[in-house]
Image 1: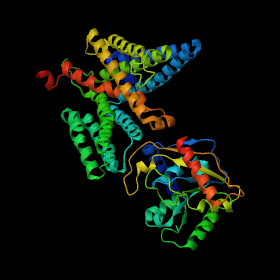
Image 2: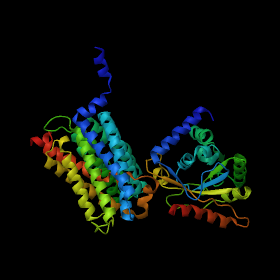
Image 3: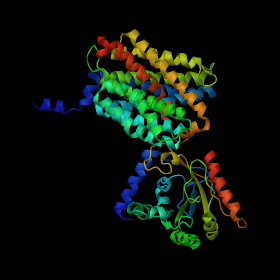
Image 4: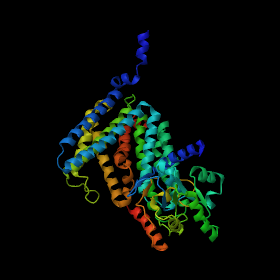
Length: 210
Length: 334
């Protein structure tokens, strides 16, 4: 990361603070630089930026978001932000012009991208929801957890972001938002895919009522 | 020659504070705050029993907000006109943000909200800064009033249209229009002449805050009969009486810094106190209606609305009563 990338990142974080006052609430979970998997509800293009800004500096430096290639790789600015500022891992979404082979590759690329040091930010709905309702989870979260046994999966609930920048809009408005980090889950040894995905989704829903 | 230079290099603040009327007024308010803070610290030691302790800690929280507000006012006044306008612009921005956050809107309101935050809000404060009273007084009640439904209609979402538009207009009127009357006091010309603006602003802020503090203390300490049981069980008649009395008495005690006679000053204090309590009741109604969602903001940070809703209600009325009876503007001529 060059000084330019770093100062741009700082500017972005200050702007996010001013516009959303985004405050992080850690509920039954404490910030730690250990390897973790943060999974969050997805309702706005700002989600990556806001969640990334909410992490404490020592955690943020060791955390990489997963970014969809079909969105983040289609202009120079987005590519720059994703790769140089957020240090994102670009993947091809299989349901957005990719194939089944891409799905498998997305998992291997992600695992290679985090190694044994980096934490990961992932939006398991795969795409932004239409509004308040959270969509069902894609299986990526399960496969990652399976390949990284024992890793802590931290549910994150982001509130109000769909109102700050709704789907299809390009001008954000300033509204107060909050980000809640919940009690980490661990994939059970005998747990099936649907069971686990439902449990993970429930964990975010529970945070929204906290 | 040299001595004269030294006198000139003395910080102007130190000579200004005791010499000018505004400076003395600021000192008086700071003294009052210091005394109240001391009283709160002593009361905290002596407090026995839950209701008293709750009252003392609510009072201490009020005092913190009051110190902050007075400090910001003092800075704004010292920095001249632009500083005050900027301070109130920021306060307005935070208020509007908080208000819209607890108000349900639909995606169809997005562009209207954008206009509210990025055009109407800054424009109102530019008008305050320019002292363009004619447009300042009508921009939001007339032009923004029409712009909000027009923009939302163009967005093409008919669901709950009236409700949504009314909510946005309420947010603009309280959070932007109401608050902007406080810095507008700085530009007011009085028939008696002289620059009374900063003192009037400090007077308004002080009586309103004193009223709020008295309301809190008496409500929590006595748990009297509620004013409107359906809205808030906390806000009591006893608190209302104490709040009005505190604002009136303090107003009277501060008459020397205003263009009012002692009784007029008590009356203006009473007016601000009563309006402050009324604003607080309206906020209670909003919070009660919003239920859980209404506290979303509160749980993450100190609520700006709770601290300033009284000012939002008192400022415009104070401004217009003042202008009508003491102003040098065209109204006084007619």
